[in-house]
Length: 186
Image (cartoon, rainbow, N blue to C red; front, side, top):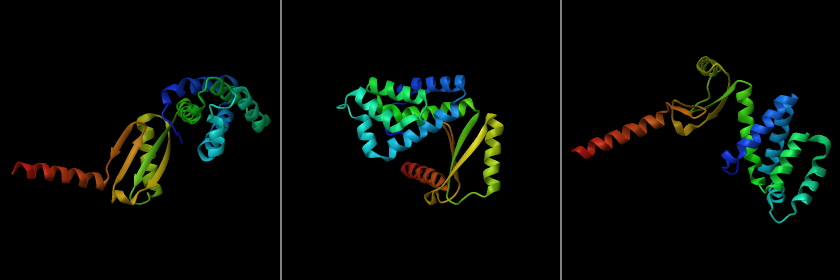
């Protein structure tokens, strides 16, 4: 989702929205609105060009944006947009949305499992992975599967920053390196 890498700068904005959402009971609504904005930001180059243009007057930019969004967006999200525009930090929008989603998952006790396999997993395999991660983390696990034939066999599992690469491709690559290293000895 994120087009730039200003995660550190986006965290305070996302954290503030999380706090507001918790206090007002609007966490799901704020999440939905941010995800909708991030989707438009990612997929619509005209919107992104308008929103990130430093040539437009910030007050006019916000007025046009507020009119376009109408009454559908909540005060916290409109406030975020106003602050980003006023401070010239519009490029952070996608990162704020990403960080908000991560913080929301943490607040709700959710963890995402990203699994790459050469062949689709059976439901039993998915359940086994999910149960293992839930047992270790104590959180609700959400599994995201991607079939990648280049792996040849095995799986690559990522939970947060932890990656377990059990792919045949990695094993063959390690074997190749090992053989080349031994060949240099002779």
